[in-house]
Length: 203
Image (cartoon, rainbow, N blue to C red; front, side):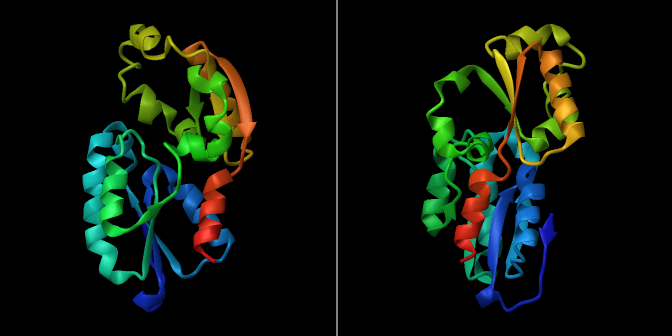
């Protein structure tokens, strides 16, 4: 997806974001009236193939780097084992800190210091909203539910880290926890470190 606003390139900033974060990034830039910021999102399905993320990011940077004064990346490491940061270092591009979106929505410091969450399965608004298609069907659990203990047997709790206070998503998260046979915990964190990062780069 893309949001294009009219302004000379030398004054514009581009956010290259994960498609799973599109709704939140758009909401934050609109709420703060950041008219000089454009957004381009890489496909959310790359979440399932993190090995493809660095090359996809490189292609996006090559495509847009001469059209913007600044580029920032809204992605965690997301399972690339440092390969994404290696690409960004080549272009001196900064990304939001954190290993993944579950961490920076929980708050990176809080996430890193909570040992109890090692056995927690996390949902954000996006993953809650799209759980059936993006995870349940993607992993074939709709056809082979016997795989459920193999996929989720090491988890004890489902933690829904919510960006918005949405009754539908809250109830959906409870239903997912019951389906996965996990305890349920709700944490409303808002946009957390994502909001801080976008605020800082917009100054």
